[in-house]
Image 1 (cartoon, rainbow, N blue to C red):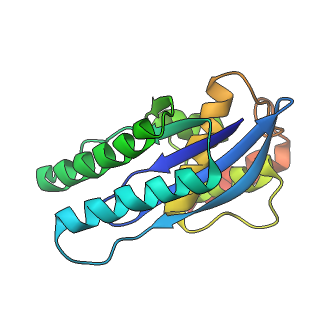
Image 2: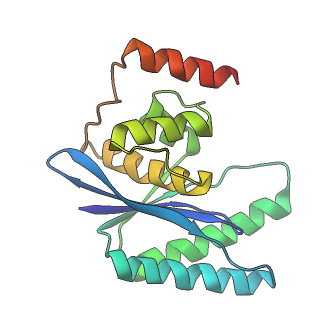
Length: 179
């Protein structure tokens, strides 16, 4: 099974693909959809078209997307909601079942800490997926974390980094949190 994780944004939407089989997760790819500056509606169309293209290219079986968080800037929240809606429509039109995850749930699933930093999430993604380097940029690694969270929440995948961690991993995560 192939899962598409999406970190919605109106300026840089992250996407990540994780394949799971035999209770193991495998990294496929991740990246960002970055529309050119211009009319907001044109950026929405670009994001929809790019998401549709990615779904056609990789043919995921399921989708997972981060829920909207509420900030102080109502206009920014509204734009994020519109971008998120367009991405959900692209996934649904492709027939994907879609799961929705709060940022704290994604962080807790990947690192064991719902308040983890983005750098801690990147570190644990690299460790859990056996990557030589941390996935970048941050929007892409966030999307990859959403995909991995989905496989774990569904009880499908057990990553080495889940559950009890080695003391050196705990120490590294603690040092990163203090930065």
